[in-house]
Picture 1 (cartoon, rainbow, N blue to C red):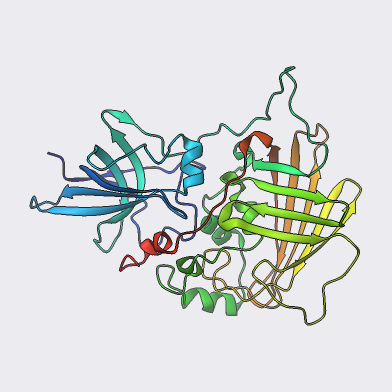
Picture 2 (cartoon, one colour):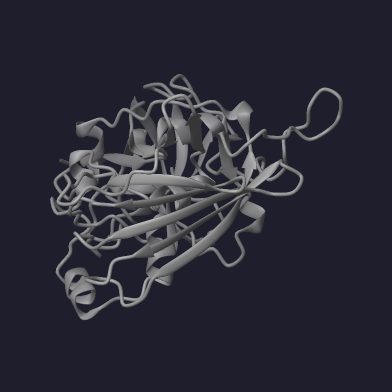
Length: 349
């Protein structure tokens, strides 16, 4: 019987399903350990679905592995549901195992009854939705549901943390904060179901659609992501940011129209220990400017942000990506579960 075998693996663009509230710190991301065993639990919760598998160790003694998957939203879009696995199922699962020897890992592959189950999103969202008459579905404005065209994310390093590690240039204070940070500890806001404010919603559009709603009657707009149920109110009535206003997780957003483009300025962010999933904090000087503008064919939108935080970032970060109008995707509640979110901690929460 197979126990544990380690195989070298490669990571494909957009293939990881672990893109949620913590990075791959503490896991062997260069190799996959193969485990053959029996499902004992299949926990369908957010921010991660967890699979518990009992398998023999090298000495034949039973060990229960905790295997992390993506959120229920992500794995549903892969084709899974809460009945895809059940206690008693025999499976072979490949995991990126914890480096400290703990029976915990991130799923890489899974086979049930000789059939491989999907563990990546693929590139199915890289084309506009085609209407009944054979033409691409067009948006009337930037309002609607939008998902990233992953085929256009050239040299994308993968993962929220990978993106920001590659892009951010840090001050001495930012570098010191990273050195003091332990991702797999109580310092991680994700351990308490605290989400990540903008611009995380931009980076996560390879997995979670961004939703814009325009409320013209009340001179407001709303920007939402399924990811940790992020929602911002954008005031479109000409007001500025309040002096000495309350600082909140999502900040205070004001917007204006530049032709057909929606421009949003967000400030007054509350302190956050790791808004980029890298250990770089944000504080009172953080500011994000966003621009959302339809392409000429109105099937896509260019989404751009400029991130500034001079206390921790040595220079502003500008990023621009192409999103596809995707009204067919639907929008789901994330509803982070505290017990599930803490399983990544060394003591399992």
